[in-house]
Image (cartoon, rainbow, N blue to C red):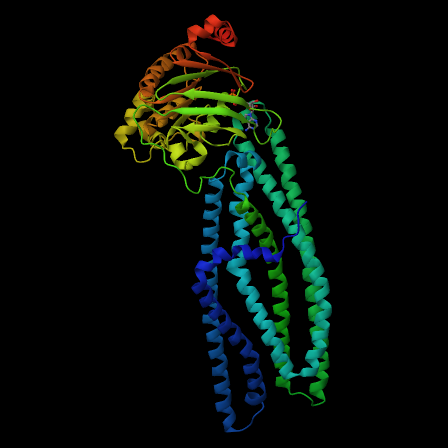
Length: 589
Ligand SMILES: Nc1ncnc2c1ncn2[C@@H]1O[C@H](COP(=O)(O)OP(=O)(O)O)[C@@H](O)[C@H]1O
Ligand SMILES: [Mg+2]
């Protein structure tokens, strides 16, 4: 249901244009000078014909020289002013687009995970590239083309009136008849261009998704299907684009035919006027040049309208994007966390209920209350889908609970600045991520100010040092996009090193050792235990060795905490934990 983009949408661009007022003013000056120079050429032309050619005697030689010189002078002014206008306006287009791109990216990076659940990456990328490019066309060309053509139109028309009022009236009446079909087709082009951009966005979103899952695609030998699927999307985009192009072609042919038809007709009348002596040849020449200018200006305006309408669509989408405010915001007057004690943070959950926005009916956390003391190590266990990862997401405030509250060191986390909260937390996620940078920089992501030595020390702690050393270029080795050049266990150890480098009072480990072999796990286990000293740690784990060492175990099922206690107590109790322990831990331990 694409709504028609309104041209008033372009007002949304004003904040981006405002900083460059001076440049716009200079561009405007160049534009007006160039237009005036162009407008005076037919007049100079007439003088040349009527006086230069028409006069006789020795005086005419001087006249001819003078008028030709004047004509060249005007042309020079036009050349310089046109170039200046082009430079100034293109500069503005590039500058404003760069600003918009940066602003869009900055805005997207502040969105909560909910935004990324519902928005495809490809869509965001298309906003960043396609839409901003459309706006660049407008700021960098269309505005100046439009203004130029408008000046030429008004100036040319005025000069036409002065030259021959009667002929001008005839031509104006005819031009008015031309406007209606142009407006109609203009509307159609506008709608189709938005559709066309949407289809292109579809195609790039699809490609993005598939490229991110290449191994899966190939393992399931789905290449042919994916190629066909993409081909179909691209063809839909093509078909939509052709519709737009067709409408626009029609618009062009109608506009040119009608406009030039009118001019030829008037010329024909003018020719009679000259024969009958009601006009001079110079007048008619001047009139013709002005009407060609006016017609060209109308054609130019029609073309500009197409671009402007497309840009209005693009601006509308960008404004929509800017209007989406993240649900997760820092409070206006954030509280400060108490200074770190070196003992770890205290964490309290009071009657927390939460469901993911996309699943309003299924509680992911159901009346969860826990009290965790500074320095405690808590193991969180439970079947897959129990809500363990969700718990961590809430602690990081990726989502806010619908009910209840979470307190870090006695402060409701909603009263903390987001950065303060997240600075206090180190996380090793379930699917650890590496960036397309080298090993050193990937670990340093945990604390950008860390020295190389500190990074290497953290890598040693995470039992990552040895395998990194063995990479072809050691710490300088490029890890590949999304870490494709590492094994799962190696990626996990990079993630652990990153979290250790951050050195936070609250450490969250989400199945951080699940992809490790027994030997690396033993190494990492040692490291993790060292890392747990002096901080509060929550570990989601399946392995007995990890769970047993925890001070307390929280057992979750279906979003609820069903049991808490020490390993021994829970085994003795014979509940879910005892069952899980018997099932899973036995095999591993
Ligand atoms: N982003 C999401 N949107 C909707 N539902 C989700 C989302 N993430 C997880 N869930 C659902 O919430 C429940 C708890 O998931 P999770 O916390 O990841 O479980 P686990 O204990 O295995 O870590 C599951 O039923 C899961 O399907
Ligand atoms: Mg999980």
